[in-house]
Each structure stands twice: as C-alpha cells, then as structure tokens.
Image (cartoon, rainbow, N blue to C red; front, side, top):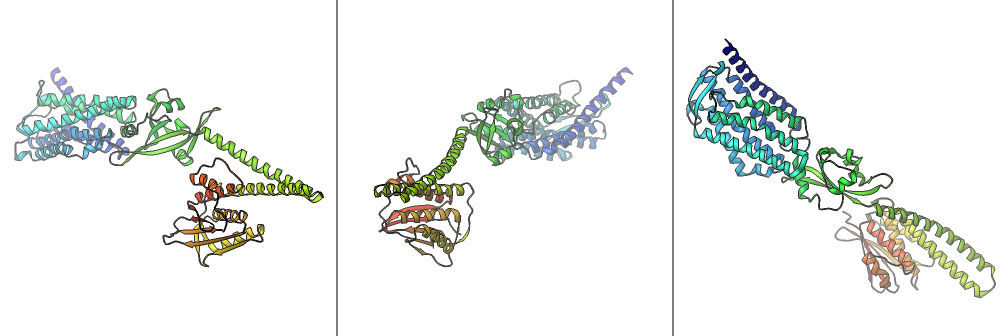
Length: 561
C-alpha cells in the first residue's frame, strides 16, 4: 500500500512538474510578446514555443496508453526537442550582435536537421528512421515508451544539444566582454540549460532505473523559472549587447571627450571614463539607466537644443553630437552621444557680444559728440589754419559712424535665420540706388536688369552686400560711378555684378578675405568688404573679385530652381 502511495505521489509530481513547465512557459511567451522585434526576442519566443510543445505533449503522453496516440505524442515531443537547440542558438546569435551568422548557409544546415526530424517524427508509422521497436511500459502508473533510437535520432539530439551549448557560450562570452551589465541575465540562462541537458543525456543513454521515462520535460520547470528571472526580473530585452557591440566598434574609450552609448529605449548602457567622472557614476551595476536620470534632460531635448549644461556653480557647457549605432544589417540599435566642452568658446562669445554692443553704442555716441563739437569749432573760428583740422575730425567721425552703422546693420541680420523669398530684382536695385544717391547726390549708378527678373534670396543680406560694394566703388574712386547688373545664368543661378572704373582694390585687402583670416583692418573700407563676404556666406552664395578696366565683383546666388 505504501509503495502504491509513493508511486502515485511520484507520478503526480512528475506530471505536475511537466504541466507547470508548459503553463509557465506559455505565461513567459505572453509576457515577452511585448518585446517582439527586439534583438533576439522573436528567436527566443520561438524557442519557448518549442519548449511548450515538449512539455505539454509529454504531459499528455504520460496519461495516454493507446499505442498510436502515444506514439504521435512522442513524435511531438521529439519535434519540440529537435527545434529547441537551434532556435536558442539563433536567439544567442542575434541577441549578442552576431545576427549576420543567422543568414549563412551553415546556420541554414543546422535548421535543416530539426526540419527533417519534424517530418520523420510525424510520419513515423511509415518508416523506422527515427526509432524502432516502440514499446509501452507503465512506470509509476504512467505511460512510458521504450524504443531504439536510430542514427538520425541521435543526430537530431546531438545537433540540438550542440546548438544550445553554442548559444550558452555566446552568452558567457558576452558577460566576459561587457562586464556586469548582462552578467545576471546571462548566468541565469546558462544555468537554466543545465537541467534539460541532464534530462536529455539520461534519456538518450538510458541512465537510471526507468529509461522509458524522459525526464527532460519535467526538468524544464527549473529551466523556465530561471528564464523567467532573466527576462522578467531584469533588463534582458529592455536593452541588449548589440548596442554595446556597435559602441565597441566606435572605439568607446578612445575619445578624450565624455561619451556614452544609448539603446533604442534611450537608456545609457555604457559610458567611458570621462563620462563616468562627469556624471558621478561609480558603479556599472547601476546601468542601464535612462538618459534623463543620468544627464538631467531627455535625449530628444539634448539633440534638439544641441548642448547641455552640467554641474552646479562651476558648471560646464557641452555641445552634443549624436551618431546612430547600427548592426550589420543597418538596423538602428541605439546611438553614441559625444559631449564636447565648449565652455570657453561660449564664455568668449558672450564676452565678445557684450564688448561688441558696448563698443558700437559708445563709439556711436562719442563720435556723434566729437562730430558736433568739430562742426561747432569749424563754424565759429575765423582762423583758416584750424578749419582743415576741424574738417578732418568731421570726416573721420563720419567714417567711424558709417563703420558702426554697417556693423550694426549686419549684426541685426546675422541674428536671424536666412529668409529666402522671391524678390523682384528691379525693385531691389532701385531701392539700393535711391538710398545711396542720398549720400552721393552727384554719383552715377547704372542698373542693368530685365523687368521680369525674379530671384530667390534673402533680400536683407543681398541689399547689405550690394550696397556696401556700390558704396565702396563710389567712395574710393576719382569718378563717382558704379554699375549693378543682375542676370540669370544657364545653370539656374543668378549673378549680381557690381563694376566701377576705379583702380584695382589693394590686394592687401583682398588676400585676408579670400583666405578667411582677417588679422588687421588696414582702413575703413575693409570692414565693408568683410560685411559683403559675411553676407555672401550667410546666403550660401559665392563671391569673386576681378579687374577689367575697373573692379568687377560678382556674387553668384545658389541654384534658383
């Protein structure tokens, strides 16, 4: 009686463990469905599906004693076992960033084995290629099967066993390569494979007093528990080593600037020593961590603004550079964020802005005062010897005021983004001529433009550029003459040409402009040429200085089409 109770208890535990493994695996599949599409997730869900087939088919098989039905249930168990190893290997390859191997002929041959095994298992009544001598026994009152496994059956078991082993080794290698971030998950999965491995070995080699029972399905229960820990209790599919591997290829620690890698969920999964120091990270076990938690702002905001400020009273300003990380199939698996310290540049820019504003304001006010006093002296004195110095003071004052006004006009324009609109070239040039004739009433300004000429440009920037060129021509020649023409070229661009009859512009003034390196303004006209050059650059246009019986300056606007 006691023996029957013990046997019944053993049978109940065995069936319960097998069913629990199947039901628990179904629950895990349901949970992981939210991660479908993540690196390795689809492969692992397929692996779990094969595991469900093994456990549930064998749980039912132990309760079925009808030979044909029992044999077909055994075939389903074989099918699940044959697929578990290769599918797990596919998961490991993709999860660890080696998904290119999944698409090789070698891996295709591995998948061919479970495919053929499935066909042989489901057609077993017509051949003996998978097993022979199928006999039903009743250990512990359960329905067990004893048969002779054929060579293909051993091959199928060997392939699934070897494929699973390769998958485990890949995960272990990931742990060694990437430190603590994936250690718990990989260790749990690697340990989980030990239990079904024991079951497969004892079943195939007929070790133990009851070789007609396959322990593998029941031993999938602790396997499922460890899998649940790895995938539910940690961050297995919330982040993955593909981001790490891509970051590794980008030489994570080679840059002197703070740098960190993020996954597709905007979590920081790795950072170099400079970033650890900057953000006070002392323990890699804290990773992965959301970007906003580490930096204080979201990745989207960082990328939109282009810079962040880190620290308290002694804060530093960093420009943000973001580069996408992709796997071997150009799938985005995360990004690399590099921070460039621009604190000194920002402080210098701020200081220059303040200095520029103060100088322009003070120079304009003070020169107005100087000019006023010079006019008063010139008008009140009778000594002709003092009239010439007074006129010189007035002329210099007007020149400096003109420089300040030009700088102010350009500064106002540069503070806004270029505003490209359709402009009537005739009206634009007419306005420029009218304004300049107020200051040069005796000048001749010829305009050459067709009535229907429409150009795409920033009218403010183009007006500043052309006005300064014409004013320069009128102000520095014996003959107060200039011509301005606008025409369309064959390649769809617009050319604005300003010509005069003056001597060639001093090469000393043009050389630094062509080189883009002004070290010294030799006299007032230089600021006008620099403003022209800056305006042209802001319009994304080109400028060319030539000489043909007078200076010929050509501004070529971008493609109008």
